[in-house]
Amino acid sequence: METWNMYYKTGVCILFIILLAAGVSAIPPLPYEFYGNVSINETPVVAGTIIIAKVNGTEVGNITTTAVGAYGGAGTFDRRLVVNGAEDQIGEYITFWIGDKQAAQKVKLYAGESQKLDLTFIPGKEGSIDASVTPSQSGTIANVPTDEETPVPTETQTKAPLFIAPIAAGLALFILGRRE
Amino acid sequence: MLTGVIISGVQGATVSAGSATLSPGNAGTVHIMLDSASTGISGYQMTVQSDNAAVVSVTGVTFPSWAALSEAVPGDGGSYALRAIDLNSGVEAGATEVTLATLAVQATGSGTAQITIQNLQIDDDAGNPLQAEAKSGTVTVSGGAPPAEPSTQEIQVNLQTGWNLFNIPMQPAAGFEYADIFKNVQSAGHSILTYDGSAGWITIGKGDRLTPMTGYWIYTTSPVTIPLTVQGTPTGMKNLNTGWNLAGISGTTTQSAETALSGLASWSYVVSYDSARQQYRDAGIKGGQSQITLSPGEGFWIYLDAPGTLSPGA
Image (cartoon, rainbow over all chains, first blue to last red):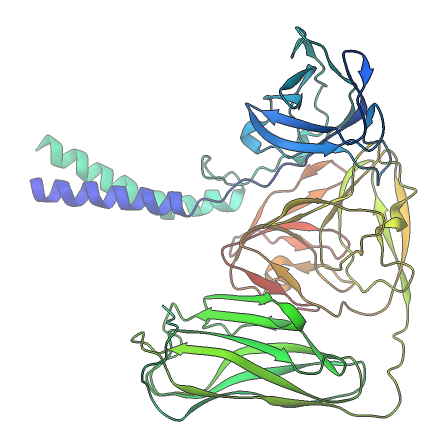
């Protein structure tokens, strides 16, 4: 029985590994874009200043200013600070940095938004202003299978028994084997 | 699986590029063939190229069904680095006249060009190098009258309020090739975007050329129709990476995903976006029960398990 137990455990593990390996990553969320004015201690920053956006300390976008005291613009073809976040970062705060200085503003990451955000860098005010918007583009998050989720579309529901049946059988036999 | 040193193998095998005759301006295909595989093949790699791009250029590559894993990587000078692996023993020992790849070629002038094969390496079923001679093929573009300009037609890009995922299914005519045709769209500070599996999100600039069979995201504050003059089907293929890609189909008719993507061996999901409802539609799964349709004017996400190419009119 110990031998069978080992087989069942091995089989179940292999099946789970196969399912995980077959997982599909999430559709990349649309970026979040920012533009506006920028100052340090109420002085407009010089052209050539690099502004970096971070989520949990990881850079998710940057822009180099090309005009005094401003970054990006509102036109379709204007440059902007483009934040590329992952699906699991949605709802996390974006913080904005120039070197080791953090802006007073912070914004929750959502997909497909664009926001005029004036950035102010004042000592003691780091991250003190929550400038988050109400998300308006929730439809641009796709509902497709991921590594972490059970597939949702109808087609996968009809396929699921093909995958689940051998696992369930393996688990049942495994449990029976332990009881004996 | 592939080794870099040819040690021994069956003598006399030949890999040859086929010959073709094209009319000026026309497209065609050239097959890369292995005449005999007495010990089967497990995979190959090679570089193909036209030696006279002023006469003929290679515009894309498709692989036969036995090549479960394959890729065609564009290189310098219009070359393509081809790799394919026979995972399912599709080419057995003793096979003859084995198609290794099919090249899409485009006549760019008049005269003669050679399709050359370089850096050829083939392994047999046992993993041993297969010694094979590479032979170039000749593509002749016959003289005569210069190619007639394809007739133009006007199509429309209809944008709904909010985000839209559109595709240009035909070849844009002169004056309509660049993104500035969308310069009057009120985008509320949103960029036009596309996505590349290796580079990630790409922001489209005013002077960027719009590529047919590519999904582009665009945002508008109100419905707007952009007229677009096109001329014929796209001339190039759409290269797709492993993972998620933004793509579109060619032509003017709506097709089922299974039909439109039949030339792609390794796709597993397609997801399109309903701009009227501002949300994704249900994912289409290869071999699934639901019949997913793809509209020419809409882009879509497609997930590939291995690199592939989407052919115009496929």
